[in-house]
Structures are given as structure tokens and as C-alpha cells.
Image (cartoon, helix red, strand yellow):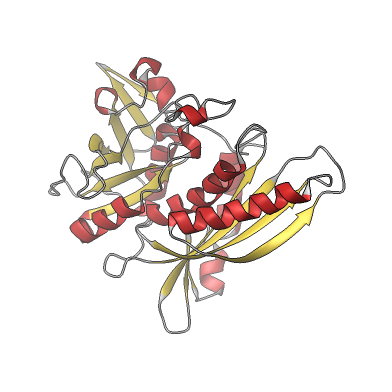
Length: 315
């Protein structure tokens, strides 16, 4: 099974949702669903899951497992310039998982929610029939849309737009930001900060000049291609402009690493952005341009290579 193929299948089969259910303003195919509630206000819905041995190792501390589980769907809320309201947590544990460790995991989930600004208000617990199975932790989030800009979608990039990223990309599994991450599977992917503050600032400052946005979860190459597909355009990236977490790793590998959780966005060419977001200090780097066509290309000197499939697959 390939993630991109499965997502395309789900998206195709779900097109009738918007037609059949008027409360569904945006269904599968973006970072969050957008649902209209009774008073006419749109809300964001998101669900994400972590699986042991796939998204974290057995050596990962419970506090970091919980933090990543909460932070990942928060990154999707940020991708649409929303703000979180509340979370639900569902967990399936091995049959022989110790009670004390289970208590510690759920305490860690609650603590992570508080630290990241979203209360965990309920959930569900189950166990596998077998021992030696993986921990599966799923988080569902409800969020508010930006009050003026509304949800920023992937499908609104325009020819001529400038393409930007926050922070840096690549090496998220190998780059340990603290000595405490020096264990198998440690790295930035466990301690990243969802770019909620940055997304709100962009929507506040740019309003309609902020055209399209998503978070980089699977790698800059494949995620830029997803904006291109949704918007019916092409994105051309400049290899020399892309900020790399570990420059010695090289741009072609770094754009495919995935789990960056930075924002990738396009803006009107008349928009003027600072080098850093006021308040957070997060870098804003122009890395490319939107052109007519399809897919995503990477310019390396005089050469352009296709990077539309360069990225991490979670499925």
C-alpha cells in the first residue's frame, strides 16, 4: 500500500460529501476538514495517529510520544491558519502493557495538551488481544478558523505567487536538538513546535495576500507537489535558497526526509515579508515561485529535476 495512492482513492470517493451534506464545507484532501455548525460558524476537524516502530521507537520517553501525538495535528490546524479548541485521545495498548506505564502515558498526554495550549477533554482506551504489539495513539482536534482570513487551503496558489517556508527542513530524525534526544529514534521530530503563532501572524498580516498553505509532514518535495496538484499549478523551488537543518546532508536528501512540520505557503508577489516572524523569531525564507504547469521542480544550477515524489510515506 502506498500513502499517496490511498489518499487519492479516498479523495475521489469522498467528493460527494460536500454535495450530499451542506454542513461539510471542505472534506478530505486538505490539512483539516471544515464543518459548519448550527450558528453558521465554520470549525476545523483533524485526526492524526502515532504508531510505535513507525513514528517513534521503543526507547522514546512517554513524554515525547505524547508531545508528538498532540503536536502533529496542531501542525495541521496551523496549516489552515486556525487555532485549537480541544482534543480527544484514543489509545490501543499491548495486552501486557503495565498499569503504571499506562497511567504515566495518559498523564503525559494531558500534560502535553496543556503545554501546547489545547485541553484533552476525553477519548477512548482499548488493548490488543496479543502481547508484543505496538502502541497506537490517535488524537482528534477541533479548531477555530481565522476570524478574518478564514481557512487557508492548499488549492488557492496562483501563477506568479512567491513560495516560502518557515524554519529549516531536513534531518529531523538524526538531528538531536538536545542531549536528552540522544537515543535511538530521537531528534527534532519529537520536539518541534507547531507553527500556530507564525500562521496566525501570516493571516493577520497578509489576509488575502496569503493564498495557499500546508505543513511539511512528508517532505518539501512531495508536499509542494500536493499544493501544485490541488491548485492546478506548478511549483519551482531554488535549491540554493532552501534553508537546511544540516547543510552537509544536502538539499536533495533534506527535502525528502519528512517530519519537518514547518509551514509551506504561497503569497501574492506584491506581499512584503520580514526575514523573521515578529515575536517568535522564526525564519521566513523565499524558496521558489508558482508557474503554469504541474508538479514540483528543483532548480540546481542550470538543471531542474522533478521532486514531486520525493518524500516520506507514513502508510
